[in-house]
Image 1 (cartoon, rainbow, N blue to C red):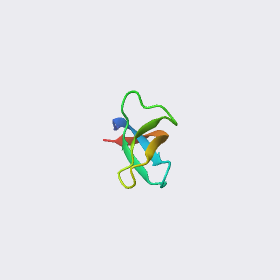
Image 2: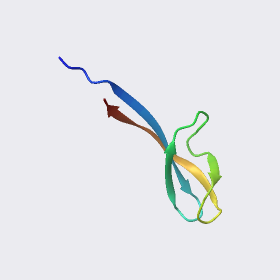
Image 3: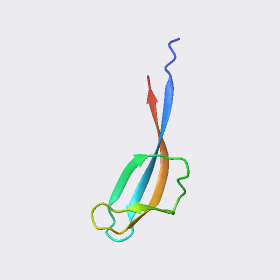
Length: 59
């Protein structure tokens, strides 16, 4: 009867190879699993993409 609008937001999880710190950010076109993505903010090691997933929001 009342349909809710569903919106999916894509996220990327990056993990530092050196210290293991994880960071979640919004997905950006060009993100590929297991690719090196950026420098770690805590130890200056390289972070790689560990997971890409979507969260569903209902309005």
